[in-house]
View (cartoon, rainbow, N blue to C red):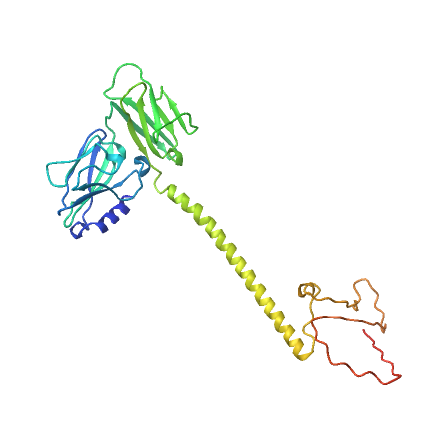
Length: 333
């Protein structure tokens, strides 16, 4: 994600910023950071791309967090009450009471000139007298441990929240030691988000920890794309099959019409039709079977008579009757 964000920021930034690497800043949770603005102009604005969108509860795009002037109040709840202008320089901001969800890339934009992007990474620390450490032993096993800071004597009980909802009893998240530790499966989609540990029966807030998807794993957006693309591909295949079938029917009907036209013009019967094709043409035939079937004895020279009616063959001119008293015989082999 970092490289993609950096490319996007470089495209949006003015010319002098392009090619400048982001400035990495590492802070502990509960601390603060000064965000200097190197841009110039009468109107400045700060944008932010979160590192943990699901944890922060915002989209993973560039989001405007401050505009100077007017006022410093950001439009996002994420920084409300914690982000203020700093007198050190025009456009500089001070972000207090840092949490892990604040991690991401900050950029100040102006009419000309710009400060290189600031990449903030918030690590463990002490916030609301609590701290959370993590230990991941495998792609499907992670342990979160919550404890008081500074350490105090005596037992303590903790409650866990996931995306601001009580954790409850989950099959893939097991609590131990009065809630001090939680063993979870980070590869599950449901485990990705904002984990928060709170001290039981305490009025203060808690300590947050962001669980991100495994590297290279598809996010929720990609899963929706799959559910959209797969049915679309099926519909395309069905449409192609129906189109091919209709084209075949149309071509077959055209060939039959041409055959009927030739027969009407010449009076000669066209190619013989198989018994399976005759009903499809709507022909009504009273033709008697002249060819012996399997198992029937063939009698040479047997005299047979046949009467055929076929609506597709135009009526030929009447044949002059044979001379009076003549007898016509037909021998069919």
